[in-house]
Amino acid sequence: MIPYSRQNISKGDIDAVVEVLKSDLITQGEVVPKFEKSISDYCKARYAIATNSATSALHIACLALGVGPGDLVWTSPVTFVASANCAIYCGAEVDFVDIDHLTFNLDVGALVAKLERARLTGRLPKVLIAVHLAGQSCDMESIHSLALEYGFRVIEDASHAIGAIYMGGKVGNCRFSDITVFSFHPVKIITSGEGGMALTNESEYARRMFRLRSHGITRNDHEMTRDADGPWYYEQIELGFNYRMTEFQAALGNSQFERIDEFIADRHAIANRYSTLLADAPVRLPWQHADCTSAFHLYIVRLKLDLMSNSHREVFESMRNAGIGVNLHYIPLYRHPYYVSRGFAFEDFPEAEAFYKQALSIPIYPGLGIEQQIEIVQQLLLSCGKLT
Ligand SMILES: *Cc1c(COP(=O)(O)O)cnc(C)c1O
Image (tube, rainbow, N blue to C red):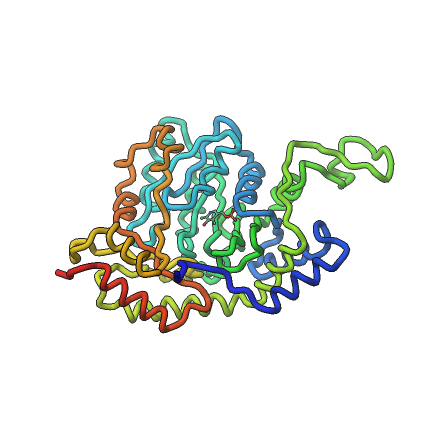
């Protein structure tokens, strides 16, 4: 099976992990801070907090921004469940903004309309989580000005988008947001096995997230409520979690990070080849905004079903049967039983519904060969059935 995505592990990656495993500290040593510094330097953000997953990073990002019971968090429905669950963890409620039909990111027009209605009913969101689907940034400049106008905070769920560029700056610089989150799951751009990171330019958010990552404990004198009882002293000053990344995960992350530009270039080469190979295929290719350079975590096409005899499902099954690990990113979140029970109506999200009926992710990852790409495209053409 050719998967839709997979990790690319080198001898150097393995050596880096083994070296840490042979050292004294396999958690809470110097490798995690080094990984944090590499990523914050790369993105030009002031602070970076490594976590054991992007899901954890999203959770503590929401908490750092004060999300709690009674609050609303808005996000895109076309994303992984973690983009919304993080708000529920905090006791908040989630609502969705329909997507743009070209980028499949949340649509700023729909956002403006929803904000206007929410202002009238007094139900404005506390936080908006902008998801950079497939690795292409959302329209962050517009989102940022709406955030100022309506008084909400912004988290970028950039799980797909480390290495992407928006308006000349790296995604993660937080120029138009409060916090940006990356994922280092094996299918993502670089991996640490499991892992995530939150970036911010605000010292207060950073301090909060460092603390929440590790049980709400502080060892900083100025954060403590009393003078130290002795040299052993620390204080738990709020309820936190164990969301720490291990040293050997960070070693893998650091080693992978050395190849990030190579990985992104490979993904671009693959995407460019697909555009050529698929030029005459009955699919809509991923559209790219001029302000964005995508990280191409995913390559999502939309089937032009009216031009083919087979259905979406038949194309999907036929590809899978041929050993090509196509996928669908994503089932709109309001369709999951957990969210259905919260009372969402499918017809409120016409663009997400249209997307769900046509989308198909075809394989893209560093190491995917030209021959494999040709096979994938030939199989896709066969899987569409008779063309009309
Ligand atoms: C992968 C992913 C996450 C969660 O990442 P983990 O590191 O697996 O917790 C969150 N949001 C999006 C959009 C993702 O693709």
